[in-house]
Image (cartoon, rainbow, N blue to C red; front, top):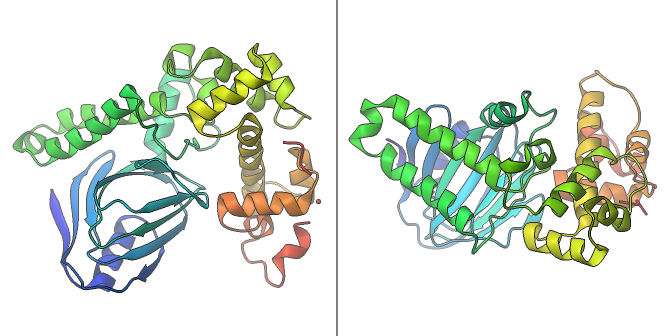
Length: 330
């Protein structure tokens, strides 16, 4: 365990937080400052931190690079936004390519689990034989009332207590085993867009009908797909499928399909940006089922915090809206 910062200088704390995580924008609210504290409880294959700003703050981390952040409020919970939307659940996760924002009161104290993308990819590869083609996109909120979720979250807290104990320093191998429990538990427990690629036993919490619908979305993302098509693939009625998605994901089948398609678009635009592929925003969007470009651009901006034209060309200047104009059917 290492104390990284303790004191009242929020700007100095912000510099330390940036070094440990990634660049972000910070806005400090008014109020009598309290002592801030930033502790690193563990850092090996993954890392665990405890952070309290001591002031009301708004943090906009933008699009995360190659890591996942899991937030567990310990005190004074505020609001967390992933992909531009506020997460209703108290505990949340955001990963590569997803925007992250927080509005926290002065009394907020947060336990933060930092997972490198490589560790999550390795957990998937252990089950499928190969790493995922793109980073896993987890459902942002952890389900309240699910005993398995509660057990995993308590394991994260227990890891914090273990990391502060003498045993952690004397047995790095034990710490490594603890890390594996957390990473594999997250992949098996929390819904994500690659769940269909995992063995059936890897996600028992999801009904088979939902897994079949998700697999259908993955396989037919570039084709005209309706909720009726997804329900037929899942072998349930459209109403049942709607109810299952609301219960298990807090979303709808159509919104899940759109999320899968947006992720495919995002990956294609990143390849255009690095020169490994060519094409226009309109061509890529149409390829993945978006036929109304202005609506597509709004969905994309909400998910990734920028217009698709900016992803395809990070150095773009002028009016980025002009190339981002064409109802998607997803």
